[in-house]
Length: 390
View: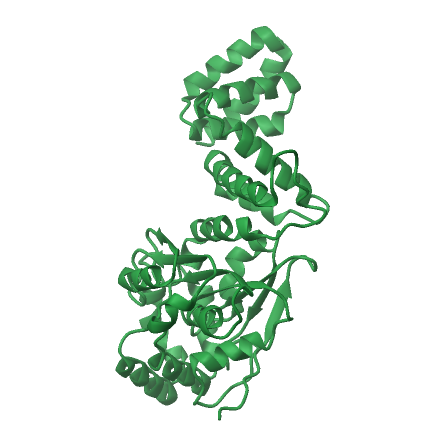
């Protein structure tokens, strides 16, 4: 009987938020999820853990399995429902937690990022374990770099984690992967499941993602272009958007944040939030929305949900006007109100929605007549600066 594992972990996010558990890949620490943390902690109480001998977790001898790791993760959790996810090895642990080690209904959602039910033949994993015991974990960096990232991407901050990993613990994790085969248990997963695959992932290629997709009832797949094995690091915005679009509609009703309005259910509000967030990102861009999300506090949370649902779903997604026309209306309204900071944001949005610089100029000329020349003077100055930025 293998001794219980001790896993270092950390919790971030609102104390009253629903619980989300995230596991890392082999050779990395909990910080592999750092790019997603600002968006996820806006609503979720996020528990991240380190694998044995990684990060802050103590070293562990060989002999543990994926099931052992899953039980250790469950030992960290309070007795409440939770969503769970992981990348690579962490994804296998999440699958075991969701499909084999919890009572039905306790897992509210599942995110499987660049992972598999079975990680190939056991021989190469055992060979890697032997190589690490002989030469240390850092010796793998030249091999793992091209597997984790596509050419030209600087993932040095992730690769640097290898130097701090205990060799025996890493080898033991390799042996756990050698013995991993969850294929026959996938049908037991009942939680809504998102499978994220890197289009150029040599470690867990697309055919392994398809095994998960076909084996887990009603799972859905997102393929991230120009990404290898650590897609959540290399293509952080795309993966974050996919995860939040999947998880946030699963958020439970909150007595303060989710009061249903007339004719609307709590679930409908979450669906509206997800649709609004997609539109908000498409119109304003990931960088702006990520900054706004990261700056969200308990005080501003309800307001951010309000504008995402009502402005970006119920208005911007109405079929009566296309986005080009809505940009024209928005620019005019902002000129009239003298909201110059918002105007700069929506000049960029208008370009994204297909307006040319000449068409933006025509809108501002129209505004000069109906909103006043002083307002138009300021608006032209803002627009010219934004257009010059390219």
